[in-house]
Length: 103
Image 1 (cartoon, one colour):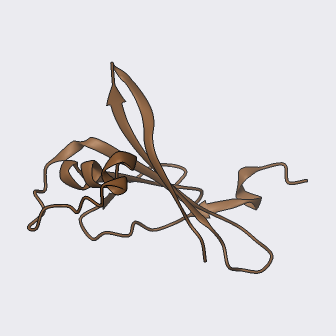
Image 2: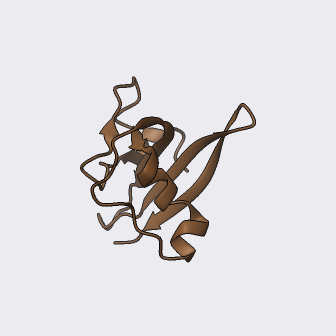
């Protein structure tokens, strides 16, 4: 059984070019990112259920939506990626949406 995160996860890159990668001490384990607010709105679970697409051009207003992304290490090399969207609700940061990318 693995005893530390480094044996089971590694950082994964953001998918959209407007998502800003943030510098942080655990960047080898997970990526922290800043989303444009409009993109964060479009990837919320209820917005995806309605097939909402982000506006084009995408307004580049940041500071309300953040992401955490990591890839699970597997023996086969094809690894799923977990993407979490964080938003502030009632002065508390919460995961408001997630997505699992399968290889």
